[in-house]
Structures are given as structure tokens and as C-alpha cells.
Amino acid sequence: MSTQTTTGRSGLDRYFKITERGSTIEREIRGGLVTFFTMSYIIVLNPLIIGFAADKDGQLLGSSNGEPNLAAIAAGTALVAGVLTILMGVAANYPLALATGLGLNAFVAFSVANQMTWADAMGLVVIEGLVILALVLTGFREAVFHAVPAQLKIAISVGIGLFIALIGFVDAGFVRRIPDAAQTTVPVQLGQTGQLAGWPVLVFAFGLVLVIALWVNKVRGAILISIIATTVVAIIVEAIADLGSSVDNPKGWSLNVPAWPDDIVSTPHFDTVGEFSLLGSWDNAGVVTVLLLIFTLMLADFFDTMGTMTAIGAEAGLLQEDGTPPNTRRILVVDSLAAAAGGAAGVSSNTSYIESASGVGEGARTGLASVVTGVLFLAAIFVAPVVEIIPSEAAVPALVLVGFLMMQQVKGIDWDDLEIAIPAFLTIVLMPFTYSISVGIGAGFLAYVLIKIMRGKLSAIHPLMWVVAALFVVYFAINPITNWVS
Image (cartoon, rainbow, N blue to C red):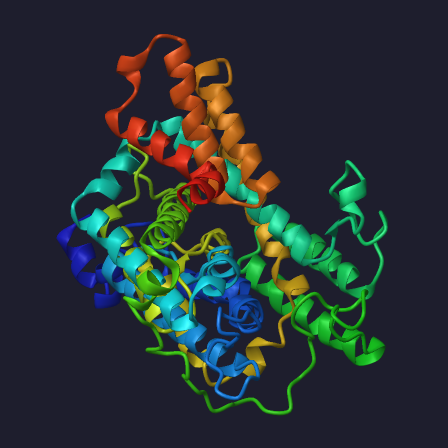
């Protein structure tokens, strides 16, 4: 790029390398908006997951009167997501948003807090984040990332693509768990009874058809347009049919009820912020139990982020020749800080969100998109009623489309080379089948090491892959190990 051209660019463009990465400020803003709309559900969903779970003393998170304090948890969730997502954009210049990790919050609520107080449980989350930060600063986390074969990294991206597509279908009610799954060999089905029923599913189908139609016709802002248009349709449907939530009506909306709120602005309360204890858990649950809990949290967080940032980089065309994103260490530092910050704010570990791929699909290529998403999260602290207008049925068609886009990378895997094809296959299929990114990565890594051993190619295994494989053995056997040491 000539000096004249570089000089003619704005400071914002030069800082975020917008032109250099083939993007525009308009695309970055649009991508940031789409990412926010796609993952804003966490502001509502996180309080529902951790707000009703009692600790070992029967206390609820952030509550002083025995009643759930969902508003405070929602405010804390938006606060940490906003600050850390902005930090990701400014410090790492990467189109990656962060928020309370699903799965991680459920683990904290139902496997950690029931053994100690909520303050102790959040203290463990802080410790876990600090441990991962130390692993990043010493270079260990980045070294593990470099040790992973390039085609396994591709498999991680593809698996995550299928995973988020499944999330989209499930959140929309298009795919549902069979109520009597314990008595049948088929765990999921189409709709509630093997057939599609209910207006919300129809709204989702409308959104999916719309986003596909816009995308194949190369309409700018396809994903954002579809989310807004489908939300408008959902509001109209709710106004006419008065469906309500699926909690009260099986054919209702799965999360947010798309009705215009009475109040646009609300006053936030941050009752969970600062409510953590670093040392209490060691006395309440015991050293061995605490170490195992920290290890489980750490391993899930460690590899979820590795997979997510690789998938986002691959979709955005940002990966370097070795398959790593630019500014890898900065990305990992921010992600580690997010884990600790989530615990310190009492809203569970924060981590990188694969829903960021929806913004990338809309054109985001730089950290400016993350700044936009982060600012919207901070604004959502005060305008949560507006965020709650968007039902998941209107947002998740974007995840299905992005799942397709990420699936296209599967052609980069050599399916004739069984030493990489089988681990790649396990990585890809187990992510959606187990509803866990970490399980897919672990199975793929273990299969890769085992096949190399079976073929007598021990020297081809990177030393760190031995370490990671051993850690995943412990991860998969964590329950029997916990029972044995206890």
C-alpha cells in the first residue's frame, strides 16, 4: 500500500487495519450489530440458568430475601460482556465477542455451587481464569495451539459449524428432545411430536428462508435485515395470537416473548459484582475436590476458546499460514481475563462466543466490530426491555446459515489419510452429538494420538499433544476419579 494511500486513511481505519483486511467501517458496524443481536439472548438466559440454583446453604445468587435476583444477574452479565468484548476489539483487533459461557454457567450452578456458597463458587471461577492467564503468559496455551495439526484445526471449525447450526434448530424449536427419550432409541425429533407445530416455528422458518434468499442474492446486510424483519413478523404474530412463553404454552416462544415493552429504559442493579471469595471453597469442599473442579472448568474453557477463535479466523479469512489467528496471545490474554472477570462480577466464567461468526458472515473482519458489540452490551444494561423484544426464533436462522458457511471448510481435510480423517471425523460429529465443543476436541486429540501409537509413529506426535491427550483422559474420567479420591 502506498504511503499516500495509507496517509489518506482515517485513524480508525489504520488502528483496526480495516482496509488492510478488506473491510469497511460500515461492514464492521453491521457485523458488530449482528453479533450482538445473535448472542444478546445470554442477558436473559444466564439469569435463568444460575439465578434459580441454590448453593449448599440454600441461598440464591445475589439474593438477600430468598427471591431470585434476575435483574442484577442480567445487569452483571451485560456489564462484563460489554467491557471484555470492547477490550478484545481494542487490544487484540479480532472480531470476537465474549459473554458468560453456556455450559460453564450450568456447571458452576449445578456442580460447584451445590458444594459451597455462591461466593466460594465464583471465587473458583476467578482462580480458574487466573490459572489460564498464567498459562497464556508463560506461552503454554499458545504452544499447545501451535502443536495441533492444521487439519484438526479445520475439523474443529467444521464441528463448531454443525454445533451452532444445531443450536439454532434447537433454540427455534425446529428440533426437540423427545419427552420419553429414556424409553426410546431416538433422542431428538422434528418439532414437538415429529411434526412442526406452532407459530414460533413458522416464524423461524420464515427467517431462515429470508436469510438464505438474501444471502444467495448477495444482499448487503442479509443477516441483519433478516433478524430485524423476522422480529417485526414475530411481534405481529404475538400481538394477534398472544402465545406467551413456552414455559406456559408448549407452542409459545422459546425464550423472549416478542412484545413491545412498557418501559424502554430500566435502572440497573449490580448486586452480584464483587461477591466472590478466593479461599472459602478450600475449607467447604476440600482441597482435592476444589482442584478437580478448577481443572474441569479450566480444561473446558481452555479448548473452547481455541476452537472458537480458529473457527472465527477461518471464516473471516484471517488465519496465518500455520492456521493461527493474528495476535493469538492477545486474544488468549483477553479471554483469560474474561474468565476471571466473570467470576469477580458473580455471573460465571466469560468466554469467547462462536455466535461471533454471524457478524463475520455479515462482513466483520476487525476488532471494530467487537467494540460495536461491546458498546451495545453496555447499552443493554439500561435498555434490557428492548433487547428482550428479539425472540430467539428471529435470531437463530443466522446460526444455521453460518453453520453452512463453516461446513464448507471440510474440503480442506484429506479424507483418504485415515490418520487424520478419523480424528477429524470424531471432532466434527461429537461436538453437535454431545452438545460440547470440548468433548469434540478431546475425542479428536485422543484419537489422533492413539492412531499414531498404533501405527508406530510416536516421533510424529508433538510432545505437547501427549500432555493434552493425558489431560483429556482425566477430563473424560473426571467422575470416577472424583469418586475414587473422595
